[in-house]
Image (tube, rainbow, N blue to C red; front, side, top):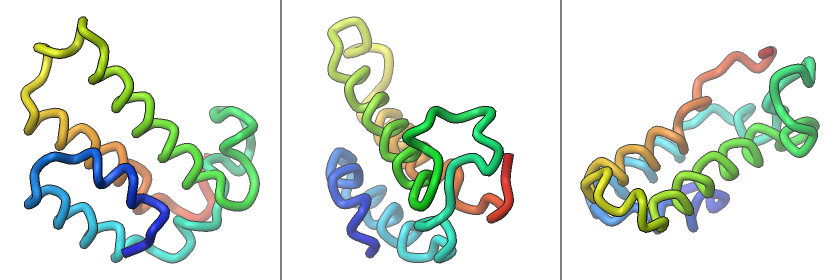
Length: 102
């Protein structure tokens, strides 16, 4: 498994979804770990640009969701399984983008 998502995958409670997340991350294309989130810089903040920007963008999106899930106002909005699937979706949401994107 690519260790860069170790913490984010640990936030997933379901062992089955964790295992699936590890499998998917292990099978992401190599470019995913090096490209910027945006080649033009138009649609992403500066921290998501440059080498490894897509990883920083992805980790930020997962961290925001994780923090929102901890707020009292969201405690009953989603089941644990739904929260796990949202985290998984965010980890993978740009996993198969073109190396030349936005």
